[in-house]
Length: 406
Image (cartoon, rainbow, N blue to C red; front, side, top):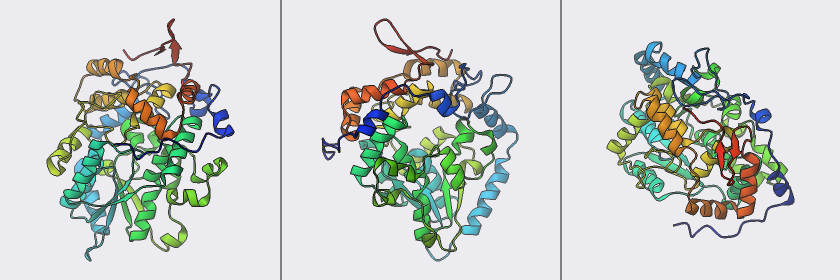
């Protein structure tokens, strides 16, 4: 399927090569605690950036979920959502809400509900994955055939692939260029279509553990987005690597001329509706024909309905494992424990089995080809981002975590 990806990419510059060597000071970079502590209720650790733990050893995500069941009135929140929709609903047939959408279960759930439950006219906007999977492409078209309008934006692949490679080397995250499209481009599309309401999915800081001050945020403003989504790597950061304004044009948010006097609000659907990813999967399957991973599960986890869109997605989570000792299985298991779908004991077993799974060889070769990296260059980057405080090597040279959830 991926024969359209050329074998060659612009060779690594001397600067890119220099940035791929040497152990990174991850603790200073992310402010990680020295001692690893695992939540007594789920399976997340204190190595997740910005997460906090109370005196009982319970993480901020779990304490937030307690509030969801006790403190928050979802009936009142739904009334707030209806008022919000009433304020922005249009009667002339034009779009009145923009939903950033990958074609995954969560964004399908949001857009379909806004249209069919709240009477809105949503436009879904997709920032193309680096490399579409077959099942991701199927689900993307399934939402369109289920009655949802969509705009697909696909950036210049030469620029995007170079950004992916550089992000791998200097940030330890191949997905940084994709994150720009999810965070800044929706504002531009909304401005150009005269849409004043953007509805994102979940507030990750609350749902998965992060800055507790953002728990009650209805949405993120530009400064919040740069802090939580872009890790303060603004678009202009890339000029230091030789990217021109023309290269970066599609990644930028709207300028003042595009916005004019328009005010654009950005909200989280999870603020108004109790966020339950597994329910979203069943909802999307019933209403749009959404299909799970045909292989039975996604690489690095046990789940069959997450991380379906992008073929290089396993390396996004693999580098997270290297830096924080936390992978896809941890994220999935922690959330399902909070939802009451599995026990902590089951979650521990699933994390210990799947979280450290190395991406498969075919995925590795595809990633090397896409990012324009050699085997030795990728290994050098992996070594530089493997946190020595969290990882050790056995006598036969195999890397393993010093401390695992139990």
